[in-house]
Structures are given as C-alpha cells and as structure tokens.
Image (tube, rainbow, N blue to C red; front, side, top):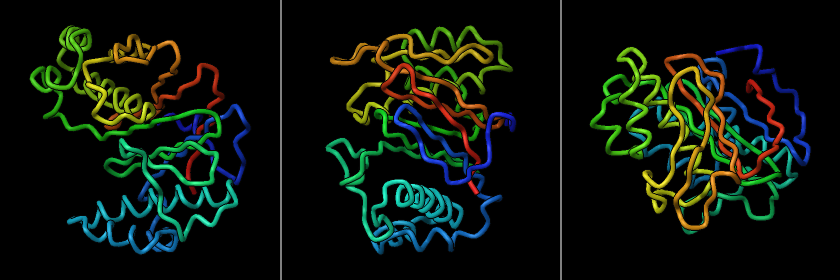
Length: 240
C-alpha cells in the first residue's frame, strides 16, 4: 500500500464534487463490538449465518463502519434502519442523498460514499489458482482475454485481479448486477498501465460517462473504484 496516498480520517465531510473512499484494515480496527451496535437485528442475524468467524467479522465491521459514516454525514438515525434495495439488489438509504458502496476481501475492506453520482468499489485478495486463461475466458471479454494472454506468466495473477476488481467496480456502480453481461464491456488489466473502462456495449451505457481507476493497494490485493462522473475529486482515507 502507498501510505502517502491514504490519510487518517478525522470526521471531514465530502463536498458536492467529492468521492470519499475509506480503507478498512480488520486487524487495525480490532474488535467488532463497536460496529455491532450499528446493525439492526436483521443485519446481526445475517452476520450470524456466516459459517466462518472471519466472514461474520468482515460483514459486521464493513456494514457497521458504513452506517457510522452515513449516520454522521446524513444526520439520519441509520443504526436502527435496514437498507432498502433496488430491483437489481443495489442497496440505498431512503431519505439520504448519498451514493455508497462497499467491498471486503481477506483482511481489508473499502467503503465509498459520495453525494455526486453512483459509485462502485471492489477489493480482492489474490488467489493464484484463479489467474488462469480458462477462468478469464469465462468472465472476461474477448479484448480482455487477449490482453491477459499477452502478459508474461509472472504478471498474470496481478493482471487477472486488476481486471476482476475493475469489472466488479463498474458493475456495482451501474447497479445492474449480473443482468449486465461481463463480456459487454472492456477494462484494461496490464500491471503498471492506467486503469480504464475502454468500451461499453450494454444498451444505454457509454464508457465516456464513467471514470474507472485503480486504488493504491500493494499485492496480494487489487482494488478499484468506478463512478458515473468524469471529474470527481477523490479523497482516500484510512478508517479509524
């Protein structure tokens, strides 16, 4: 992680043109009891259904931190409210003007919040067994598979998860879930090159309307965000 780009958060509020993204480190944040109080009974029951403790903790901390920020910034009593969902399963908070999204994997999570436009984030811990041409052909577009196959073997895991997180970020920002086919848009994936959404072939979607960017996390993680706005000011925070 490039720590110079992530700053400790001290209750700042996003301006109208700003996107705030918080990086959560589960080891750094400690026990999940602080975040449990932000969850409704339904959310606590959902957490309890996870088989592994690490998954219960990841859900509790990520959801709890999001609700902390929403309660502080929107002034709404978020702790005793469940989120509502659109027809494709994208959550929203009734009465709030903020767009938000979360992701967690391994020991880290991302929380994104903005008053500006729909946003999506994704973080993934590397799984070397996934960085294969067979899996790429299942989930990537033809253009992306070609770029993936052009990588030297030592870059394929990074390249695979570059593509995976960037595609997830766009899908989540678009709010269509898997009703938007994964092969209907293209992202860049080569390590060391700019992250971009280079094409969108789904009806009603134009790549020029969206901004996609990688987030500064060192291996074994990859992360990205996407927002339906071309000039958002992005501020990166370390969650406390």
